Image (cartoon, rainbow, N blue to C red; front, side):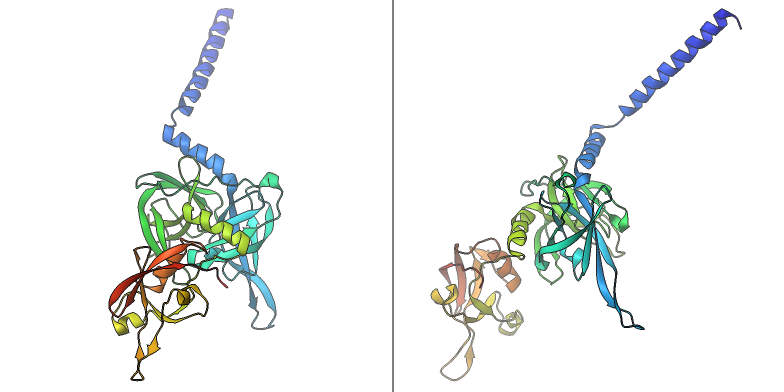
Length: 352
């Protein structure tokens, strides 16, 4: 080969390599703004997402010995640098042993700090080094609108750190908790949420926590594009109480309510007062429960039909209304007595 041919071959090879590099750089630029955002959010938030596994005790039928077996798994996320982890109550319900697996694959035994079945939330605690704990940034859910982009990170079917994307499909939904209480103002999303995603975070396009994935609506048990998340504004209110008290602290009126079945029997809507507790707010405000008539029969007492002008149709409604307030707050109750609605101010008390 002549020197000229050799030079031509070298130049051709150099041009080909340069073109290949330039093309590769151009391919990297093919990512859209939305794709870049998705990758940024995932890289930012995924270190905060954990894998939650729980074990329970069972008795061997032959030997009668007790031993632990896997009961279930789900997701969770780091709440603060003190090692608190938030997940769903149903993920750890009935567990004897809970293990948290961080993104670096390290496993840490977790202890239950507090839980509230009626909100399907639980707080765990692990003693991991702070260097491994990256809390999520909590956003707000009050300004969400239908159509906003959302991202879910979790461990569906045990496949760790899985990302799905979608939008806010609807707001103000209601779902039923494990103890048949109603969880209100729930976020509906079409981001794929499957078994194992429960307890994981729902994020906005800035990587902020806006909800805790908790349930799906599906005849098959897998995602059909209808998932639900507890809004972060609810989470921010409840989690500190679970850390401090181990349970949801709700102010009380000091009443014993009649069963909701009485509504059908007597044809009313609201919460009928069976009796008031001595020295408690309801008694001080002059509320009265069921009582005997002069003829020896029983007469229905006061029925709570409103709290702060919010309609109360059931005991579940009353509990949800009280959860918006704290002990010492004064609220206005709408009371049905003898067919007439009366309004009275009452100061809520701390639970005994």
